[in-house]
Image (cartoon, rainbow, N blue to C red):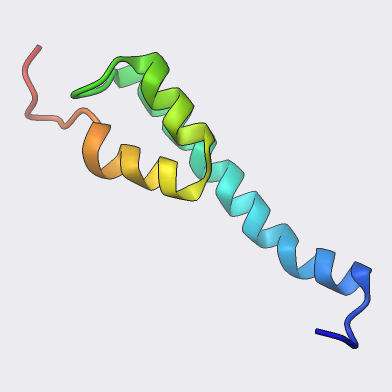
Length: 70
């Protein structure tokens, strides 16, 4: 990466940042509309905002499924 300029590096990182933020927005909307399964909403929002791993953790463990009864 020694011969890449800062502008080139930013161009490479923009899609990654957009995908990460899009995933967080999707999780945030899902949390607020559908609720969560095993922790309260605020905790899952804090977990999801920490980054991609937090958002994926919500989708795998905290997302309310269609067959969950409340």
